[in-house]
Length: 79
Image (tube, rainbow, N blue to C red):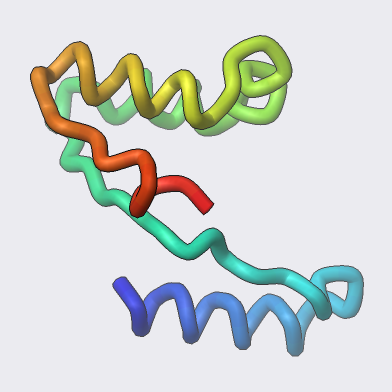
């Protein structure tokens, strides 16, 4: 994941001048998606900007972890 973040950050900074100051947040997470949910996830990604106007990223992550009974270490997960 570190390599993906480093490479993509370098790429966007050199290809899009408006993103010269782009950086990734410190933490990251990866989730698997079943084949039968691909269209639903793609629709979510398309509407993500609008969605996060009403639900913060942090609240969404908290709800997701709670839904699946996962422990969230907020001190290390969020910047």
